[in-house]
Length: 221
Figure 1: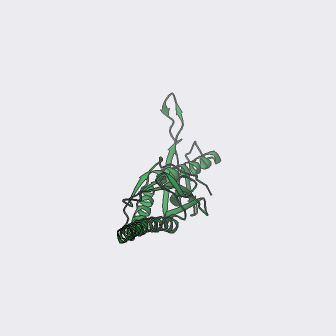
Figure 2 (figure 1 turned 45 degrees about the vertical axis):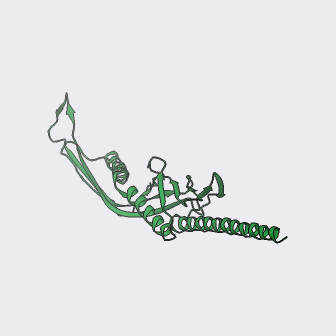
Figure 3 (figure 1 turned 120 degrees about the horizontal axis):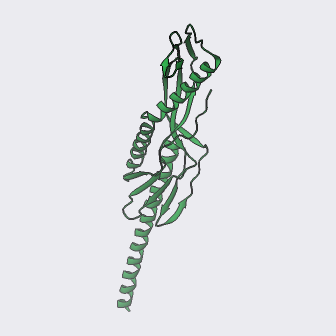
């Protein structure tokens, strides 16, 4: 009888150890999931889709459509000359000059409608995040347009010339925005903040950028 009682006590003890081990593991995983969610909400205003062992435990939600992370104001200026030609020869006294400049506000950030997902390894607690590249969200003219045109004696500046240089100024502003380092700056800032918040809880995080960094939209004013 005592032999069976001893076996029962051992089995009960082992079951209790296994139960508490499983409970601790689940509690640690739940804590990590909460840390991931809170970090993404604080940094990006988005709850990512979180997957554990190929099982989705959180779905992606976002209260806003996009988030600007980096904003910069840039003076953009262009100029060109136009002249008349006959048989590829420039006609004297026909060269007119036009210049235009204005200040633009450029915003780089993230389209929160794109997929943000996190895979959590419940054993190692490694975190693999997949996120879209940052984009140029907007290029907005905020300064007064400064325009100057010099007529040639035989070739005056026209309204079509003025419209063309303004359009070229806007195009130049968008090109400068795309070629700037603002998208990379936005990604680095977000990655650093996520790492700081999640590593504070002891978990490493790896980020994979998943799509080409293109312009989302470019409203003109």
